[in-house]
Image (tube, rainbow, N blue to C red; front, side):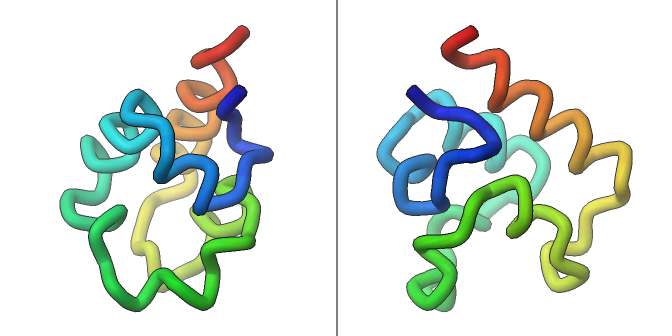
Length: 70
């Protein structure tokens, strides 16, 4: 079950979740520098300024991830 509370590692194993994130941040899920944050929850990770997403888009991604297995 994938949601915004899933870790990045778990999200990367779900093609549906990867597609959602790639829609907003192309190339994000293939970034080799993600290794150290693989255990972080997506909800927290998306809020990092380095991700570069406006608050509204972060909310949209979280909502879409949470709807995957609802």
